[in-house]
Length: 145
Image (cartoon, rainbow, N blue to C red; front, side, top):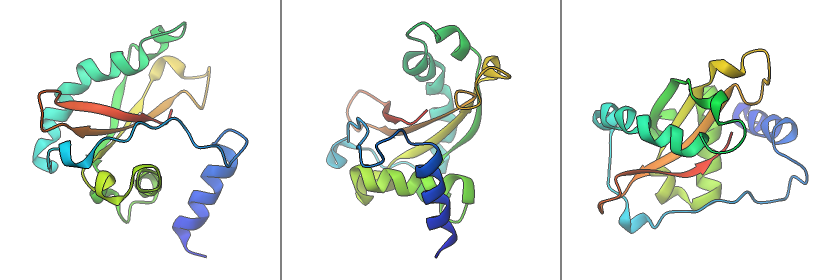
């Protein structure tokens, strides 16, 4: 069994809510409306996170716990190939929305220090983003944690 398959199995077994066959709520973007990006767009994405992270995590009773955050990883999914901790998310993105969408999307892993000692599962967040070739700019199409 491939190493990535074992990692994916363990992720599904211990992280995904039961039942395992349930498909999460994913709003797949139309690949024809996505702008092609590369690593040279990383600074622009990181700047956009200043609005995206509060919009994505700030609502609800626990919004204050997400008010402080740090970027662990911000990279195109294609760049995650061969990286044990990140490649599993690329596989998820391909499974949810197809390879064409995944290949034009980014993984951002975030660390939320206010969750330290309170919740191991909320300590880190993962969002899947893409950039619209229309006026929307960067947007989240899936929030894993």
